[in-house]
Every structure is written in structure tokens, then in C-alpha cells.
Image (cartoon, rainbow over the protein chains, first blue to last red):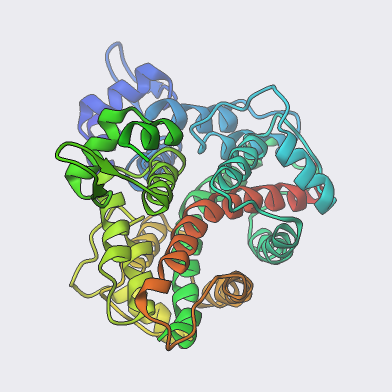
Length: 207
Length: 207
């Protein structure tokens, strides 16, 4: 299909699709003559993902580029690739520094401490913020959170399209897409539902 | 204490404290002569809460005002007061409209549907967003989320300073403060820890 059809189908202006091509967010099409190229399913899929990240998740283009970079140039293992892609959702760069609160929390929970993962820095900042207003997350709360989150994580992963260990990286994009969009879009559901369960229980106690 | 001392203790410029007084975020002090007033613990506490909401939670002043308004002019029940205060954390106004996805989800979970609560609209938006990218939250996922969130909510509420039902509204501010700051500051901990439990489980499956 021509660029104009690809753009029309994606509901985007042609200029936007050309811009994504120039930025490398979208791979080049197959040249059919000196001035035109042909585009196919790969491009259609990619535009769908870009639109979901841009319009639904609300991610700026530089972070969308980091997600796509993890798909197009995966790390040696799927695990690291997922970590990079999901890490792009967090606006903060993964600091190379130490994250003492997260380190202590993860050690207590028997979880690996990998300072290069953005979620570790994210946890450290969140723990520091809670501490700074006099509502520190103590060990008991951490344990309870982790217990229930592990159960939910097991549920999520059981539904993830995970390729077998011996499958090549070109089977990974579906897993990366699921992990990134699932993280970005299921977190707000979880947070809203959490507020509602608080309210549900509070009504019995406070009215 | 004088205004200048109050500001110095709070780590704020005097002009900022005067601004909060003009906006009504901070109650007036007790006049000690024609040009000066005296401030005490009430003001000190209030500034601490404003700073936590402004600097740690990152809430804009108009939403801080809505939290304080719920404290200063509580609704008839503590339950409604908490709902209003926590609702101020969400940037969206509570729509008076219908929220069909949230309604169906809450009905399925046997939870009350109160369209006036911001978290209901928040849940509806989150469900719509997930659906729009082809990752709808089905009933099984909803049930699992709710099951674990209820357990966590019970834990949180057991630690909340909830006054007895017959205690007057002037005992409510501590509960409101805990609910607002706990919601704002424990959610990011939960979200970060969720990403880490995903990674913890994923390493076994994908590396």
C-alpha cells in the first residue's frame, strides 16, 4: 500500500507518517519506483503501537522511540529487553547511582536489586517521598504489598505471550508490546480500583 | 509566633505564606496589634500539609485548595469527606455523567457505583483506554485485581486514624490527611513494586 493509504488507515496526516519515517520510528517501505515506496502489515502494526503509546498512554515521542528501540534492537535476553521497554514509560532516566531505600526494601523482600532498572529508582523515589511526609512504608506494609503484587504479577505473566527460550528475538515484539501496554494501561485500572476498594471498606467504618 | 517565624520554620518565603493567607489556604492568625497577628500549631501543621501536597505530591494550588476545603468544610459524613479529599488528587472533575464501563465492572464485583466519586470516572477512563488498544480488562482480571486490592485496602484502613462514629468533625482532619497523603504517596510505591515483581517473575520465564 502507498504511504497515503497507510496514513489514512491509521487516521494520521500523511505529514505525520513522513515525520515518523524521518525519525526512524517507522521502518522504510519497499521502493517501488524513484519516488514511491510500498508499505505493509509491519508498518500498519507499528503505527497502531505508536498511536496507542502517543494518544492513549500519552507518552512523548522521545520515550516512544525508546520503546521501539528496545523492539528493533533487543538486548541479549528477552528479560533485559522487557526491562528497557517498560523502563521507557517512566520519565526518569535510570540512574547509575545507589538507591539505598529500594536496596533495603528489595533485600528484605528477597528480591533482586538491579540498580540499572528504572523501576528500582522509581521505588526509591516513592519510598523517600512517603518518608518525607511522615508516612514511611514500613517492613510490614512492604511485605503485604509484595505478597499481593506477586500474586497479581503471576496472573499477568500467565497471560503474556512469552516465546520459548530458544525462539529468536524476532518473536519478542508481541511480548514487549504486551508488557509495555499492559503496564501502562493496567496500572491506572489498578490504582482506580484500589481507591474504590478503600472507599468500599471505609463506608462501613466511617458513615 | 510571628508570621516571619512561621514562614522561616516552614522553610517558605514570607511572601508565600502571605499569599496562602490571602487565598484562604491558611486560616488567619490572632491579631495582636493593628498590623501583626500571632500564629500557632494549627498554622504550622497546615503549612506542613500544604508543603507535602505541593512539593512531594506535586499537586497544583487549586487542587490543594480542594483538599483543604474538605478538611475545613467537611461533608455530613467522614466517608463523603474522605471521598472529596482523595478525589482532589485526580486532575479530572467528577463528571455527573454515566460511566458505563465502571458501572458494569463495579456491579460485577458487587461494589457500590457512586458516579459522583472521581475514582469511578477514573476507573471508567482507565478501562476505556485499555480496551482501545486491544488489551481490555476482562472479568477474570477484574476479579483478581479486586481480590488483592481489597486485602490491601483492609490492611491500609486498619492503620488509619479513624475517629469513632459519634466523634465530631473536628477530629476528622487526621483521617483526611492520612487518606490523602497515603493515597498519593503509597500508590507510587505500589506501582513501582508491581513493576519489580513482574521483572522478578519474568526473569525465570524469559532469560
